[in-house]
Amino acid sequence: MGVGAAALLVGVLAAPAQAGADRAGGEALGAELAGAAAAEGPGGAGAAGGGPDGYGRPGVGWALKETGESAKGSRFRGLAAVSRTTAWVAGSKGTVLRTVDGGRSWRDVSPPRAVAEGLELRDVEAFDSRRAVALSIGEGEASRVLRTDDGGATWAETFRNSDPRAFYDCLTFFDARHGLAMSDPVDGKFRILSTDDGGRSWRVLPDAGMPQALPGEAGFAASGQCLVAAGPRDVWLATGGGATARVLHSADRGLTWRVAESTLPAGDPARGVFALAFRDRTRGLAVGGDYRTGEASPQAAARSADGGRSWRQASTPPPAYRSGAAWYPYGAGTALAVGPTGTDVTADGGRSWRPLAAGSFDTVACAPDGGCWAAGEKGRVARLERG
Image (cartoon, rainbow, N blue to C red; front, top):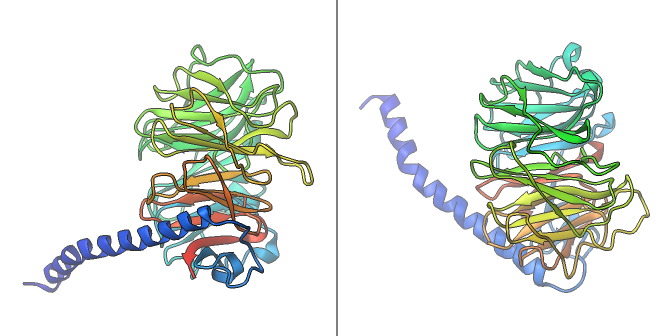
């Protein structure tokens, strides 16, 4: 047997054992999260015996990973969790970072300055350690889509908005080929952009199946989670700024939409649904509130059990505005929500939330293997770990 064949055989034999170890680790972390969700009293930095780096309860919390961006003032609102070892973050000043070693080191894989300088990259979707698609936001030509196939060594601009009335907020993919991006309303309706080749080309979908937007209604480019997909065809869009905070659902990849009112704060440009997370095509979470510092957000979370057709207010919501949410893959009802004032956890599908950690994060994402990451202001990125 040649050296190459022997190495391949070793890899094949080791894969099931590694998968088993990953699952065991994920389930153990999930149990810790569920315990934190059931415990009374707040967690957070400064609590005795807190999680890694003090950002969590005893046993589980956020372990900060040095990115080298704190002094530069970078803010990462775009986050893609590929696995426990691999993650991408995207943010201000056209910055994109990638880790393949669990956050021990980060590589600056930003698009060339001539392409991305000044761009606000608010969303990034990654298929693996080499392929990713990033969205920049803004009016007119500031809204762009870029794609890399070589880990960020090179980038191609695959879409540049030419309509000064459009402002793209979020991006999502159903699989490695099919994806959507959404813009704030144009001519009274949210605009949807579609790709069927992994983000290499895009087209604007017809708006005949899109309901009329409310006066002042728009999306929030706060965490890359105002447009989310689950399964091969279902997608949800979160809104705010109007008289009610709404969630739109499409079961045909953006061609037709049904709208439902959420229970989250509304009636002001700073209020609404900032992030959605769907575990499957029926079970969903909505988080948000009022993003202004010092403003109360007493109803910052809601849940749906029918694919977004109706929403119920959390009986014990997070204590303040939250901008990002993610389901934990091990544990049917476990999820995380993050915002400027901390992280909260639920173990009952969003009915009740408990504080897990202090510290500011804008977005959170969990990979299928249980690798959960959070990112936010001052170049901060963290991974959820057991202490």
